[in-house]
Amino acid sequence: MLSHTLEQGVLVITVDQDPGIDGRATLTTHITHLVDAHKPAPVVIVLTDRAAGPAAVSAVLRAHQWCGRPGVLMSVVTHSAPVRRLLENNADTSGPRLVVHARVDTAISTAFTAAA
Image 1 (cartoon, rainbow, N blue to C red):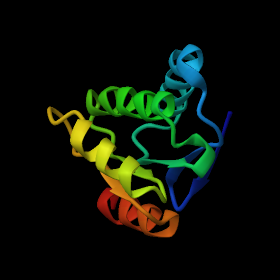
Image 2 (image 1 turned 30 degrees about the vertical axis):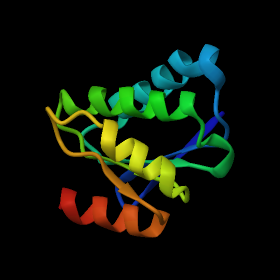
Image 3 (image 1 turned 60 degrees about the horizontal axis):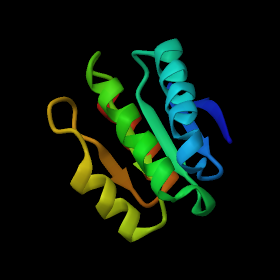
């Protein structure tokens, strides 16, 4: 369902498929555990084309709320313009802003620069 790496001090989590409504909570839990294990490192979540469904988007938005509590910078990458708009329009605004990108390399370099 997901994989992760560290690139330039940025935690990069790749979600390979939408987990469906029954797997949304599990995906959120996996993401938040990775964030907790690597904080204060910024986080980039990559939603592949197969993962850009409603349950994965919901899990990412929940993870963004989780990241906001300790002030962890979180970005999302998706090639889908409608999903980018959905994320931007529904992101929690009480903590650090959710940054949404179309390209992975841009997201990682931006997160690295912001954290420096």
